[in-house]
Length: 481
Image 1 (cartoon, helix red, strand yellow):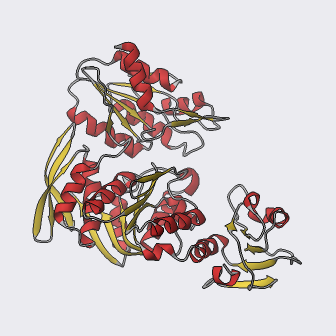
Image 2 (cartoon, one colour):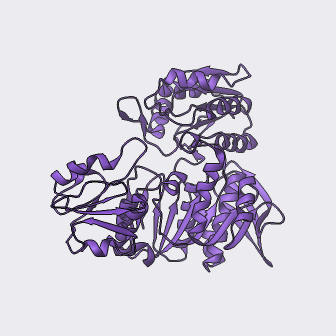
Image 3 (tube, helix red, strand yellow):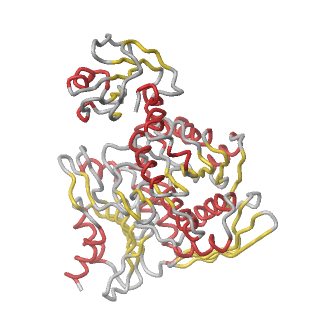
């Protein structure tokens, strides 16, 4: 594709060379550059792409896009833009022939509930007969085909490549989890969404955003790109967002003033049922995932689907069928244990509180929780999670999560510093912590293993190891029973 075509509709200054040259591929990593490629200099938090221009040229780059003043290059076109990240997002879209405009895009943002909501919408739309793509934390999907993902929202270049594959596979709708990082870093810049959901906002990612206000403002960015907004007004920040958003919007919640609301809620260990009220109509919903927060997730998804003209019968069937890996997931064993084991991705204070309060409602015996906190992430949430994990449980076992470059013992000490009770044990090795919980469990107890959910790995200081808690739990049960 011609460089001029790739840079179409982008404000730029041509510093040297010309725009009438053929480009092989776009790259923002100089190590991936091959002959005929275009190199984008992205200024990151740890690495500045401008420092790797010579590497890119040596590897065969024929054009450079930068946002800083650099020297003219004799055999290379140099283009200066105001913002390299935004330019990368727009040029990636141009290079892959604007694939996001050829599908209906649905975005979901919030601290918790993005993954569950994405799978709910996918299930409903597929029930209606549409082919659906999904981009999110667990994996990316093109219809039923699963594709591994490294981050919740890929970089813009990889994102548009994925959109292109979806278009080629005749995908009708793409449902995306849109992280606050991706919004801050302009990964979804230039994408138009037909529907967007705000699930909630609670403490997380302050290591990146620094302040809660920055975090909130990052989330709000999505709704500038969206035709319709679906907002949880039971959440205080959702209520604030609803009042700030000027485009077409619907509110949802258990609040009587919400446009879409739930009543007659009945809950058990296997799920819930409730009545949905919208305008002058009402209908019954059955979910096979328990928890009030999942009723909120369902309401947001119902709002999206009603906006899109989806039949109520498809909404009901889709929600009844949906199951999400690592979200209040009951471990199934052939052994009659007498107690239950639940895996959940809860790794924020709010998520941990939600899962523990939900499970407490149907726990006849003791509630036992195994949890930790990830390293190289927001440290301020550690004491909060320590307090929540011990106050809401009968027994807590504090252990390692993904320590990354930090000392696991120090992370655990940070967690323990917020604890006011003496109903906890510390076992650094996560496998041994899970084994201990299973050993002490009695009839009618429920064990919640929180923090990893769908993840099948653990990130250590110098390596990433295979760590699937489903396998670990079943192996322990096999040895012990």
